[in-house]
Amino acid sequence: MDIQLLGLLSNIATQDNINIVDKRNNLSFPQIFSEIRGATQISAKDMFSTAFPTNDVSVKVGNCDIASEIWERKDFPVWRYFQDDVSAGSLSNWKPTGAEPTGAESYIQQELKKIGFGEMVVMFPESLQKKMEADPEYAQKIVEKLQKWKTDYDRIDNAVAASYGDDPILYQMTKSYCIQLDENGNVKNYTVVSGGIDTKKSDDTNKTYNKVPQRTVVKKIKQKSIQGETANTITRFEEIDYTNIAPYLVDFYKKREI
Image 1 (cartoon, rainbow, N blue to C red):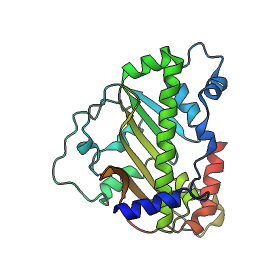
Image 2 (spheres, one colour):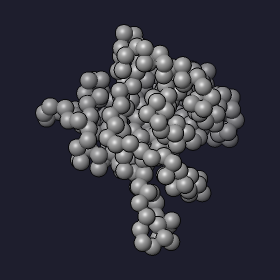
Image 3 (tube, rainbow, N blue to C red):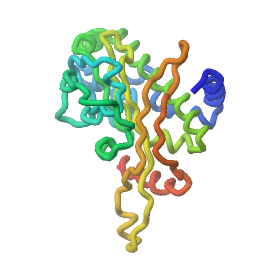
Image 4 (spheres, helix red, strand yellow):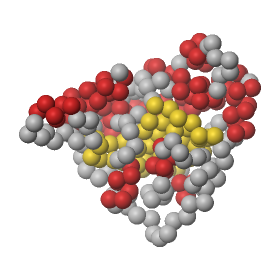
């Protein structure tokens, strides 16, 4: 992606139909505390979960010592972080065993497809957790910093999706995030996974509508620096017909909210 295209996408992203980041994901810090007041102690998990109410947020506290060049490999098993029993530091010693794959390999796709829609994993060191829970004003800055990062990321990423002909609103709903923060609350590494769902109908219509849609297309999105600008490198394995999947996707999210 060249600078001219990046600039064009940035302009597109300012349009109302692309800037579809849910306003509920932009709560002020006083609102966050208001929603979770009454607790004897407000944890960092409470703060992040309330700051991103449209996502299923989990936090992992610990030392995650992974170089960016390792994290950005398409075979880096970032999908493990979405599992409850995997700690922040569990992949710190992971090493590649060969040349980087394309990401379309079945073993990678099968693992990525297990990640649910709207999941968000936030990892950070214990030192950041302690500072956030001890100092509300400092915590406010960290939460707002991550909110801004996600808003900015989604705006340009949805513009890229729209440039491919995808519906940016439905595309946004398929995203899941794994984000590593450093000791100062800055985004150090991240992976965003998105995809479509299976809309193939079986002979039994009633069973079809009772089935939970399955993801059929998954994309990994990683950061790439181009002359001081941040762009998104997207691996597309096939086109997604969002017009046909819309009824299934809406129904899927209604069930998640019950």
